[in-house]
Every structure is written in C-alpha cells, then in structure tokens.
Picture 1 (tube, helix red, strand yellow):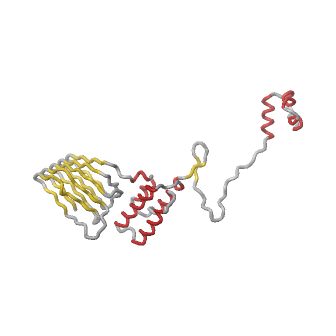
Picture 2: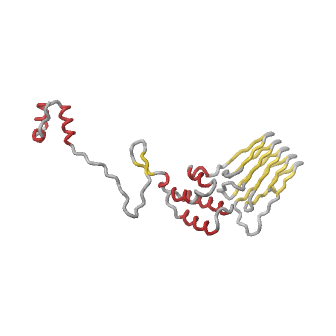
Picture 3: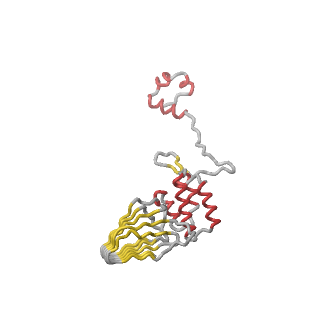
Length: 245
C-alpha cells in the first residue's frame, strides 16, 4: 500500500482516509511525529550530584542517603556520639566536631557518615533510624536456664525480669543508651540477676524487697561524673541474689 505524501495529509484527514484504512493512516501519522532524545541533567562545576534510584513506576526517586533527616534523627545521632565518647572511642575534640556536624546535618547520608567507624552505631542507623529507638517494655523470663544481654543491645525504657532458679545478666558496657532512665521490675526466686555497668551509669536498688537472699551494689559513680543512665530497680527477691558490678 503506498504511503500518502505529506501534502495529502496536510490537505485534511478525509483525503488520506479515502485511499487508506484508518489503521494505516494512524500508523503513518505516528511515523511523522518527531522524537527527541532524553536529556539527563549533568551537575555543573561545584554542584553535588544527587543519588537517585528508579522505582517500580519508572519515576526517579532519591536514595536513602539523600532523604531529609528530622530533628529526632539528629538527636539520636548526638546521643550515639556521646555514648561513643563515654566509651573512649572519641576524643573531646572529635566529639565536639561530630556533634556540630550532627546538629547541622540535612540528610541521612550526612548522619551515617558520622557513625561509620563506631561499632554498633553505624550499622544500626544504616538499617533505619527506628532500629535504634528503644522499646517501651522488654520482658525476660527464665526458669532454670540463663539469659544475657550484652554487646550493642538497645536499652528499653522499662524491663520486667523474672528469674526463678536460673541467671540473668544485663551488661550495659556496650549497650546503646538512648533514654536517660531505665525502670527494672525484678522477681527473683533462688536464681541471680547481675547488672554490669560502666562508670557513668547509676543504679538504685534501695526499693527491692529482700526475703532470705541479698542485694549487692558494688558500684559508685565518682563525683563530677556526668550520669548517662539512671537505673531504678524494684521488685522482690527470695533466696537468690541481685548483684550490681
């Protein structure tokens, strides 16, 4: 089938359709429509390139590192930096420098960069800020077995610890502390509950009801030391023990 000349199409669609089918005319019209190459934005000198990824719809969406951080995100990173300084991982100058950068950070990528060399903190933030937000309540219950929390575990706001004849160890030396206080309600039979704390964690066990067992607090916060976490232990103990060291 001969393709109608451009003059035939310009004179009106009725002349084209007179000698061709509607489908052929539509195909021919589409072939005459000019196409233009897709132009991608190239960063100018000094301009920071954006990290973008293509979503399911084909739209270009910003990568996680380019997403805007909130005040809560910045506050969380500040707390993680202070924890690292308290553990001796950052000097006073490094802490001040990173705190200033955290408080003025605009994106997740800028916050992540401040934690990449800190064990436990960087990977936690990389999984999402919510990963290191503390739970409101954590329950630990053991019979004759044992349970332990150590390393970079996230300290919750409250804990309920039930230990019949086994043992529970809560090691705060490497924990991620994002809240200034922790309430522990303990119920101990003939077992033992041990709290291992760094020098800047204060533990109060005065409100524990003791039966035939014992409560021993072997720690003391030195005068002038900033308290990073205050732990208040309540509950009751039978013939077992609660030890803070």
